[in-house]
Every structure is written in C-alpha cells, then in structure tokens.
Length: 315
Image 1 (tube, rainbow, N blue to C red):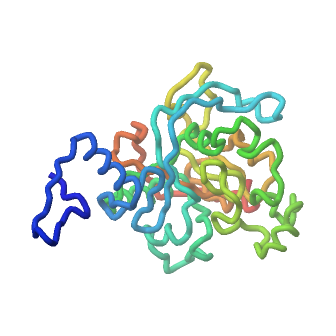
Image 2: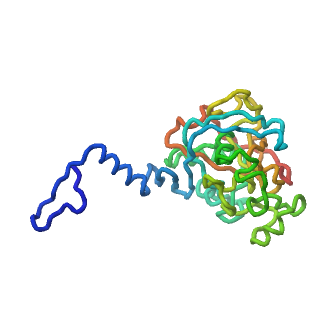
C-alpha cells in the first residue's frame, strides 16, 4: 500500500488508501532515487551520474563502449601508439580531477619531517606508483567502496570522451585549454599567459583550472602526468575487451602530459612510463571507484616503501 500525497480528507477524518500497480511503484522508487542524492555505505553520496565520498573526492559515471585506442600515423605519435579496437565492457566511475593534496593528507596524514607543501586544491605530486597503491589500500579500509588506478584503456577512453582527434576537443592544444609549457627554463610558450591568470610558473595549476572534456572530466590533458594500473608494453594486435596491460614488465604507464612539457605530450594517445618506485615532480594520479571488488583487475599489488631518485628536471 502507498499513501498518496493529498489523500487525507479532514472532513471524513480518514485516509484513503490507494493501491498502486507494482510497475508504478517501481517507477516512483527509481524517480526519487535518481532525482536526489542518496547514501552508499561509508558516507558516499551518489546519483546515477556522480558520486562524492566522505573526503570530498568526486567521481563521474562513464558509460561503457568501444573506441579506437592509439593514434594514426598522421598524428606524429610514437610508433607504439598502434591503433586497435578496445571495448570497455561496463560503466565505471572515474575521479573528476586528480587526487589533491588535501585528499592525500586526509588519508595519509601530514609528515612532521619534510611535509608536502601546497594548497589543498593542488594535485599531489612526487608520488610513486607504490605510493598510489598504499593510498588506495588505506582508502579502501575506510569503507567508502573500492578504489584502484584506472587501466590505460579506461584512461584513454575517458580522456577522449567520444573524440577521435589528437585532443578531446580537436587537433590543436593552446594555452587557454590546458596546463602545459609552463616551464620558465624550457618550453615557456605559455608562461606569460598563465601568469596573467594568476598561476605560478614551474608548477601545475590547482585542479579544475581549465574547462573539462565533453564528459565533465578535468585535466586529462596536461597539468600532471597520471599513473595507470598497467605495466608498460606493446599493445595487443587484435580487438580486446577490458585489457589490464601486459603480465610482465617493470615500468608502469603514465598518461596525460604535464605542465613541464609541450602540447604533443598531452595528446590523448600519448604514452609514457616510469619505474613504479619513481617520484616525479610532474606526476600524480586519479582513481576509479567501484561498489564491489570484482571490478578490480585480478592482479593484486602490494605497496613497497622504497624509491629511486627522479630526474630533478622531470620528464
């Protein structure tokens, strides 16, 4: 039984009970769930499109689909960017921005010695792939669902947002659309423009400082490189579904380009890698959120607390 709003009759003093067909009850339930925020276990608030967890990390639901991964020869990319069809088999939630310093501090705490400097809205950098795994392990213990790094295929699919061009919005990247070439010693073509916007040289911008792509995701081109789940290796030759990368190898994939380098490194298909213990000043990460652990690639990684010195100038 449902008590329909407005069915109380003050003259008769009775409530008219109205039986509603099972299908209509289901429609009403779906309407209220998708039309307003509700809570997941662990203080996650979500609707069908967006989710926000207890420490302020925002995620957007990306539909599954098939796309062409890699770049055509005319784009002038690396030979390893061989085009091939990839199917993302189911929808997934990807973080709207990079993980911020504030979010990092909320999970990892503040160091007494050599604390990380910067405002809470800056992307966290100088984190190794192992550091990311450590962060994820601690975040998963909070009961907000399950988190992981995106696969390389998920990352490029989300970056493109339905586009087949070099960048999500076309074949040209300029200083008004992304953070790149902000290096006052090398490749400084955008330095003056960024300064005019009140952004500092030789570092990334606060997350979300530039317009998002068509799916509402920020900073997929430039700002900071982003670690992915996959080991770096050759692409498969045939069509694949939900690839998790090579089973063997040492280096891990980094994607997106950064404030340090030129526009070409910010292309949707551009690939880079690094030793999983490296901590680059140009590299951060963003996460995938899942409501159950079976959305995670089968391989489990154990965080290792070791590192190697990075190139002081960054890649």
